[in-house]
Length: 399
Image (cartoon, rainbow, N blue to C red; front, side):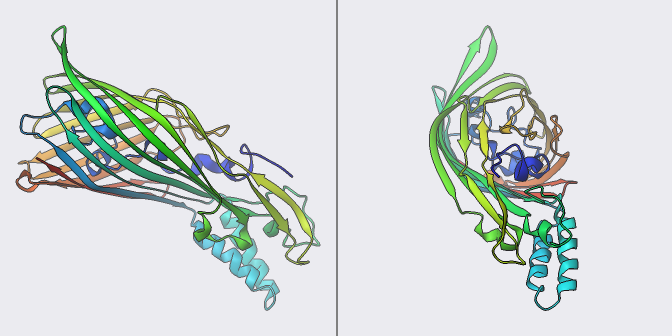
């Protein structure tokens, strides 16, 4: 039985993907704490991750900046998948000594497993910015991975057979698909006064390297640590663009990311489902293959920025389809605020909402420290009711 991406394991991806996408993952403790709304509110050092035009907005005291290290992790465990898989596997191991107890453990584990989802996103980045009045530049590199683990209960859809009580367990699979992205580029940005209006424009040419992992196995043989099997790699060129109009404390911004469309394919995996009671008879097989579509993302942002207070919001102007043929689209609204206490401590909070309806609302919070303005330390956390938790942190130095 050969079936493709639209069915089976990833048919649950609408509830399984994490709040962020690997292709747009930015690790920045300051902006992450403000809901991820960085299109207008990021500074000249971190702007390269959100809007290259921000690289040209700086103060007279800014000669150069370094962001290093910058890292983040986000995990969602919906339903306790690790425990449920473990319960099913322990049930199989008990069959020789306690068939009745084993059957009960397997049945309960499968019941709990159906609908579970486990996902993670993690990443790291660095940036070096050199602003000046002629042409500001920022060099950056970042890497990120987004992984999803889902069950495929009753993968073959066979009719129930009372003579084979373990048939449902034997034909249940668990699988992980992970997409990684590493990219490096340089942003160029400049300032112009057009018809009396203050405008900055920026562009970021970049090289991207994609890495996919696909691991699918019958539940009795599945091992979470084997997720990095069956990898594929690919490389491409891409471009980000952006613009900012600013007037007094107001900033109005627009950015386009990944303007060149790319489709990323994973390796094709075939799983054979064997009868655990006969140790030889096969119920059949199923093939899993996934495609991820990297499409341009257009975002508008607004920010009201003073020395002691910032309010900002971003809106994605289009949906991202992501996995082809699946209802896992995403279109985010992000908002956040920052209060600066005497240039030493910054308190931040934010909110994220998926207008496509795929993800639950998420709340963010964080704190920053900038003692004597010698360096900046930023910490952020994210929480949503779908059992999503995350943290990001960075250090920045300005000269």
